[in-house]
Length: 400
Ligand code: NIG
Ligand code: FE
Image (cartoon, rainbow, N blue to C red; front, side):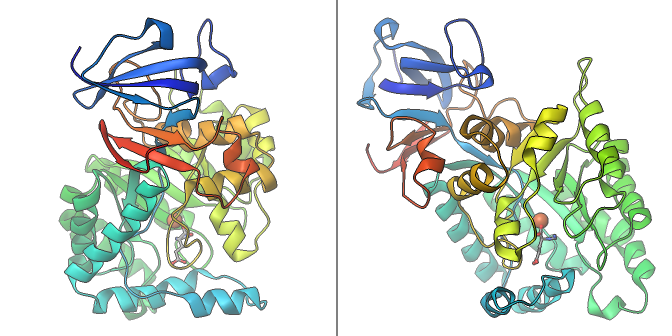
């Protein structure tokens, strides 16, 4: 058969549960093989039943998992904020206002500098097993700058998000509603052709729930999917707003009321596709806010994703394995739950069924771990366990 056979897989995480598979939702197969054909998965099953193929890659008992789906990043920006991080580690609190210093540096940066930076971060991500990435604008905050950030983002991914409502820029400090008028007017018109999603930062120091509702509704009216930053620095009504508007995801969810948890849980069920709670472990790591309690969400029946939130302010990590390790250690997720959240959960947060799972017809986005199982991602934090990475069936990286 034409194609590439990956065989001698010790433990294969498919995220497709079924008879003969272990690990509940992870659908783990032991002694397995996967056939890659034309960039897609062509066959999955027991090693002894595998078809022959043009090329064979033996994993020698190592684990194979779906590529990570990082559903929340801000990788198009200028400058960095290492000094702000140093000050924070000395006790200064994180605030939304820090975004403005990156806005100034981003406006000064050329488009080619922004593209080089984004591609560099994307390469870091790929080397750590990320095969699908969402990228937001939000550090330009003028019509031309937001459009240019989205054009750069579109060069690295189809999952682009218009985040003109990241913070009110300094030139509108006295007229925040005037800025919202611009966002829902000319800025949205210029940016919508380059975006799949619309997002807003609904938080003290950024946008109110009323402003966020206006912005998200305007984006939805133009055909953009809805996502929202809420509950990062304190509880509010943003999470329930996201659920009410049918958002694919509400991200951060660090501070949640019981009503928020109930609303998130009841957005799913009876065949409905609801709102994913996307947790961002790198943010609490880097801001010293308390970690959200993932157990509370999962036990209530909420669908949870993990993403890196890679950005220069609140979480400058590109590493999904790092986020998994922190989620297990400090958010009380099991290693199985954390792996599901970083793969299938991210896919759900982007409303994608072609990624985040290893099934016939899905994209051949696969990661070889230099370990016997995915548990090692949390058990051996900080260790480079990602071997070869296949994106659309093309393999790069270390041979295992
Ligand atoms: O997701 N919370 C809003 N936006 C980013 C932080 C951006 C920044 O501090 O530059 C986030 O954490
Ligand atoms: Fe963010």
